Length: 190
Ligand SMILES: CC(C)(COP(=O)(O)OP(=O)(O)OC[C@H]1O[C@@H](n2cnc3c(N)ncnc32)[C@H](O)[C@@H]1OP(=O)(O)O)[C@@H](O)C(=O)NCCC(=O)NCCS
Image (cartoon, rainbow, N blue to C red):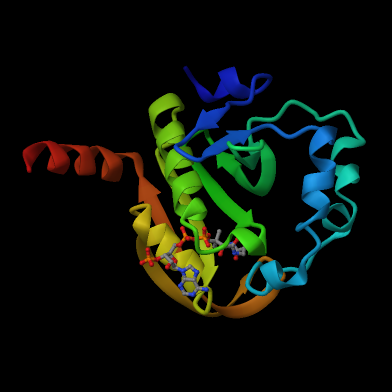
């Protein structure tokens, strides 16, 4: 499979507790419960926008086929969307940025690590992507800890740089397809 195969057929990824899947208008009531909660945007780089305040807007226009992924993170037990993630700004099918957010009520239960590590595996096993990266406000401890648990490497500190729409100290984090392969080798060796 290749990235191009997922333009029209976005993937569904299953983990122990989660279903990472495309969202539909039927998910709007679940999204309304958490998307406009300002507390999840403290280190997001910008506050909630129109689509976060009124999640139905996300489904008003027919979605143009794109190579990027914007998927919901649903609790497998009730199929309720408790978060979402993006793989976007894909360059030359080789490098992409990743972002993830969860309902405040679901923080600290390991869902972030579970969803992100499954998405990373999906990208490296099913597409040509070789590098995923992200920027994290240094104060966003939950986020950088989650990234490190998913084997991202801290690649540097940017002092008072522009992260999305805010100025702050932030880390660059990245993970390569070869990092994951190396991990599998190490697991097999031990
Ligand atoms: C970042 C986010 C997705 C993490 O998801 P999560 O499910 O809460 O994270 P996990 O439960 O998988 O925890 C990952 C690690 O961070 C730690 N952690 C979680 N919340 C924490 C907090 N508030 N402070 C310090 N550490 C925290 C966990 O203990 C865990 O480390 P451990 O296993 O060593 O204990 C979630 O906090 C979130 O949605 N934040 C708001 C949006 C955001 O900032 N996204 C990231 C943008 S770069």
